[in-house]
Image (cartoon, rainbow, N blue to C red; front, side, top):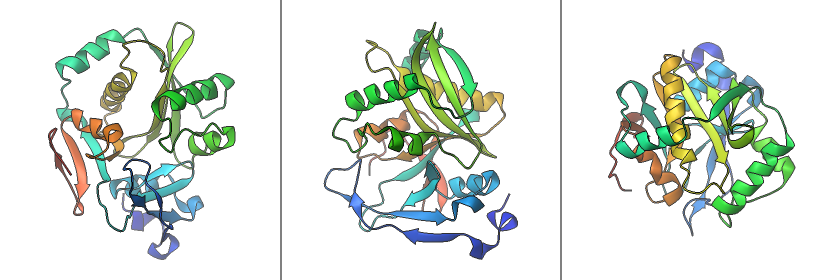
Length: 245
């Protein structure tokens, strides 16, 4: 469905933010192009925006538009052609006992506790280690599109939480956080594999993984899920596992 069929072209406005420190590449400045007003960004409109390289943080819909850098590449897994590697199959076996339940967006004390512990271990001093509950709610628990919250539990213990948007042509992984204190776990890998399988069950062709950044250790891992496509020069193109910026 075309964006132009849903709203007039003039109804969406795009503006550039002021420069701010990049969360992924040390010493770089970032800028974002923001789509407004949010009340006009319905689920079909958002699906089209994601195909054009946007994603969201809460009700804030944006894409990178940095002055001197283009390393943030929108990325999606081609679900029909995906085959897990040997190590990915080990992750599937390792965490196959996790019980997954979908929920509407909601706030629970155990969610924020898990989020806080994850940020302190995985993103300390990385620009995302803010333990402000209000910022957490604005980031993850607000949405103007079709969104589901997924609980992953080991018996009654909450091990992982994912926020996922449902698009016309796929799922969009908004954010995932997990228990950082379980030794030898591979929750992050298992989560992506689980979402790929959910796409298959829903007959959706793509899993959108946000931005692939080859120069960032935290973001380069996405190339491990092949075949991976990136939106480059206005077209979705194959990203190889050994690609470099």
